[in-house]
Image (cartoon, rainbow over all chains, first blue to last red):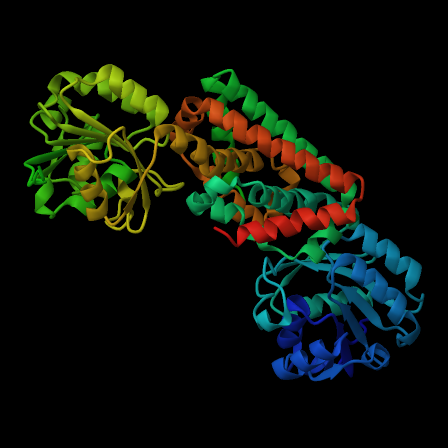
Length: 282
Length: 282
């Protein structure tokens, strides 16, 4: 059976920051996703979202935002997503499709299984875009353009996956389907560990060096401006993979240090040459 | 006595790669520096430099390139600079001003004292520009524009320093005068250690992660494409400072890891907040 996709009546975005706001902009006007609701968790945020005009309707009442929605998208830091699961569970429409945009997946998928009702279909997502800026005011229609959008699921041929794929492609991204375990292991190396390195490099720069930070240092610590609530949640919810990736990184650094300490010119050359070669492959 | 600066008859650039070539382009046409000679160490490089037209005269004979020059500029990796000291010493004009562009300064200043004749004035320089590209073919007139140019010297009011300052300012840079010791200690933190981190991150990326390197990873490993001969020399000639800076960095990383391992949410928050604050100050 080739079930038809949409058109849907209502899509709800819970958490309208940079990611949620940009997704709203990208999906609005595509009739298939219906009216886009955005949940504002405070009066201040309500006024801001009204002014920014990112969604069709801003709602302060999460029940009103969620009820009757065909698709519910949770765009928030990892632990906030899990809290939202508990809050929205009683209001979800039968067979609604629930997505999240959290940066770690195993923890979230397990929580979804625990807290969401059986009748909904949950699909864990992680679009690789955004960066060090945060806040709805930075939203832009093309944030997801060409972005890899990881989708983790037990069932890559079901209706929920098809809708999710259509959604990311409508926003300009391309879908990479993989398991939550693979996702978290890979992201620890390509994203989480590099952020830890960047935060550490910025935090530990001696005061007398501040005036001398050149292009290399600035590029390497650009992401050290990333929001604390998002990243603390990532580090804690992907703990084991991150301890492994940073442990391996420190081991390799110690090897490099040893080569320098022993003035092993050949070893230093080989290390750098390996980096030169590898860097061309991604 | 306010000694007049120039005009000079001849300036020689030994090592016409990205740095030397760009400097030649920036200084050519400024009459004060006279005819710009460039030394080519091989027939291949001679033909290439002829074609690129970066200097007024390309010379294959280092004696001819150097003799009679008022200013001699050595633009090469650290250990190559020291080799050039020995080679050019007998050909240097009385009271010539000799500059180098090497990235570490204590080692080079000591070698200059050892190998250069007493009658010349040596001024160690390190302009902070260039980056991961190398080769004369990437030369551009504005490479030094707004670049901080470190100058290390015992005497910041002498004739040689004045000429050097004029030279960097003519090329568009601004001079920062400091001691060789300070220079090497600072650069270990803001440049050398970050390069080691970048090389390590690129070299050690697991194969199954290659397809998933996002913007953060790419930015942090941009400089991992930097030339091996330049950087091996830097690491070995600034060994003690680099061992210190990388040692402190690893210590801080271990602290961060411990906070994650112990799920110390407050500690993780404080670490990231410190990075956020610091990052705004440079």
